[in-house]
Length: 629
Image (tube, rainbow, N blue to C red; front, side, top):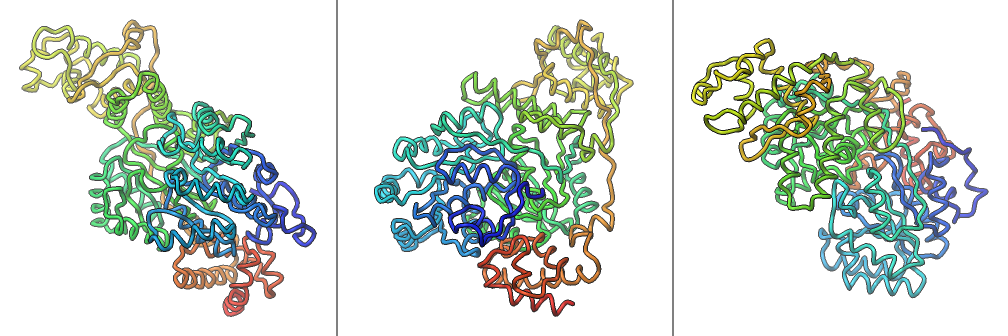
């Protein structure tokens, strides 16, 4: 996205001006989108709620005012985050920029905790990252009280703010205690940030964090570089393998699974198939989990197979795909997880396989939870919205953005836009299926409800032992659906469950009709269903592949410079024990390769090269560029 305001030279700005901070510390000429309004509002002492997509520049919205306010003598900014990985990466990146930052979490020895606390209480720290449960301990509150009394408590930034809401996709009880910040430090500005929040969740954040007077900034939720693609499950592991091999071989990706067991099995299977895959879930030993995360961040081409315990707070910019082998619980979760892909703005894919079992399992989890009925009602609505997205025959992106209240137009870059699905009038098939479930309940022999397999056997007229045992070959619905295959009937059933006309109940997923089925049976509702097929595989073109290794607009000489810069960056990252993208992003290296600056002054004009990095790496970069010429 291009800057929305022309750059003002840093030399004409005061060091406490946010634009001076942006240029000299971060190396960017101007803010993007709503960043400038947000930063100015918070820097002036205002409260804010910021909704901005992953990769949209949320961190700058609090980091820039934190630095500017520290330079103005206002003291330390406290960043509240539940994500240890984010703390490590953000602090490492800030220190690389010459900004004094630290974190307090469970990975530190007590001596390190004491040292950081001394840095904080002295006011020397610019930013301190803490988990919500630590922030509200008596020890921490006493230290904040001391800072506050001396005028050295500058700003509170509450990241992943959706965690405070019971309506959100990742509620964390520790966040509820953060209301103490307003009660105890009313004059200290607060900025709450999240990438995902529908209207329920936004209202909850404002209420629970006492942000009633805060300005609400809502950026576009659109991630145009991500291609959304949803397929029906048909040997999902094989589908995943084809997807990775045909379109993303050798590229970094994340595969989400619902259970730890499935994570372990899928990772092992991918490794056996020659894919460099690692498992990640909360049940792994902490050291092994950290080792796998470090490999994913620091090495190229790793596929991380994970539960949703992995991903939030992972800033790796070159994740080329996110795949779901199980249906998320709601659109917020889906959006958050797919948002791990393509943070660098380059093309990326969000691929998901889902089937009838996903729908049934997610509905059952809601129905059997101990939560109150109002909460269950809202969660069912959220699941219905996700199912509507999965079954949609129109643009996925329009539906996804519409869920967050954002109007848009067909994107031309999702599976439905690129390969529009055919639909058919499934009204008669739906009535046959619903009638068969109804006949089971009316029949006098055996149970009153049966599962999907038996239902389809009866519809297709298969004389199995079970059909004979219960006399279902005598039903009027026996064999009335012989014209459809088993796969087609499963698709019809899945879509009727998704539409809310059928529900699966109990331990054995027996099928029952809902109140909504009555209108369909009476012929008062038309049912249009999508024809079942997987989107055809698209071989990745040489141009697309090259574009991911190096930008396509670089000529041969610039490509050579880009490769040399990447090799140099890898060595620097290894020496500093940092992910490569924290040293410099691919976009910054590409601009260096394109412009080929031959002086420090010219290099300092490259976007992403701040004063500290110019001082630390400038001469080495010029040497690399000259050697690659």
